[in-house]
Length: 493
Image (cartoon, rainbow, N blue to C red; front, side, top):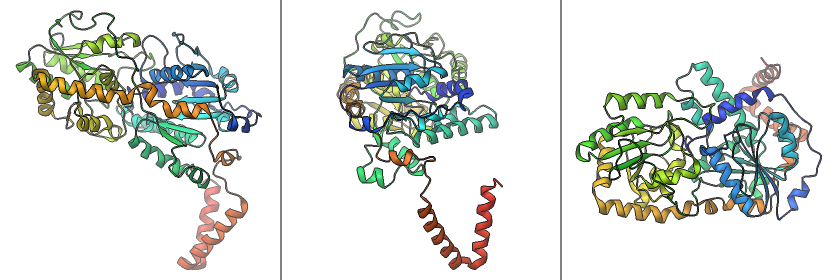
């Protein structure tokens, strides 16, 4: 969610509002037969869709879309990555482009497979009936994230934001041929959504009782090649940070669901025993100009000032690090840190920046309660501490900064586990699907005028059973009351 993340929901929500004017634009369904795709194997025309900025500096959703495009292009598919946001970066082996609402239909028509991320489905109602194979990327549970993104706004805005997220989820779960999520825990969440949407049905179940052909796990990933230093980025470069200082890196943005406050207070204590400790925030300004600074970022700056840490033991990189230079910053760090609060966003999050720590073999200190907290604890990657526990966090940082053996052991474990999370490994379920794309097994149900509509004879049988039930439970009066209730509901009362 937040997570998976650097999370994409805040950006997606902003972009969705910009697209909102097109919500009522509905084009007729393409008439090409879907059976062509059901049997086709080999190179495909693949369209990858994001709302995020494609540039030197990219946040989580754009990075994921970029790496998906790179991996698919390497398998000789004709890949086109498009965004409704800014596009300033050419692809390597695939095309990139900024598109408008008016361009989108032609982009979809020119593809065999469309991979969609963010708030797109409800904006273009005709996607429900298009013949293309649709892959929906659910790695970011944005409906849960919106509860934190909009937390300090008026309740009317919060309700509207959540309602918008739920409408988007309804549109996505009603149509996708393949869904991707970031972890097994997330998969449980999305199975619930698919069940409510009617997508767990005899067709999909009989085809695959595990339902993994409908909903698969594709985590965020790391580069397959080790990070290489181009030039120093933090030590000896940032004023106030020397070449021999010990750098604790906060990799990524500062959002409302994170807890940098506890990290600041822990560093304030650690500096008494480790005066050379330096906490470096990698990116305060989001690369998407539509995303404003969050309340937690303001609170973090204020507390660092109040504790007298700013410029001495705490440093803020005001801009966002170019994607191709992130290795320089990671390799200048001694520990990667991540802290969050205990709430629903945490439970289903997947912190993408922790993957950068894995990539750079950085020992990790993080809060418990999410997927990576469990992984760090189970694999000895550093330390997992209770949420909002300053003492525990300070002790964990001290141990890894002062105990060379503990630091080396954690680094060795990180290097071992990191191999599981390289992009070629985590993307394999998607790559396998795109080698022989297919419509979902319940595609015939989805082609109906209204998904979920039952045949007349099935409705009649269910109504007859309902009448018998109400007669047994409450007599004729109960049947009459139920009929009146249903008629009122149909009239919108």
